[in-house]
Length: 82
Image (cartoon, rainbow, N blue to C red):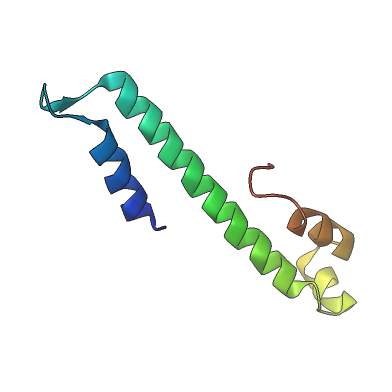
């Protein structure tokens, strides 16, 4: 789901049709939720990219200044883990 879809979904849920406005508390909660979802999507993409480079040789990891174990550890985390 794209960020645009998440934002439009959040606003459509938050809209109060009786008052014609968005509740402040609901708006803040939805914006925090959308921000969290965006962070999780970024982490999933990043860790997927890390898994893709695990097959490189040792020189690759020396060039970028990290160990294969560090990349393996980070790539193995779930998206909600920092």
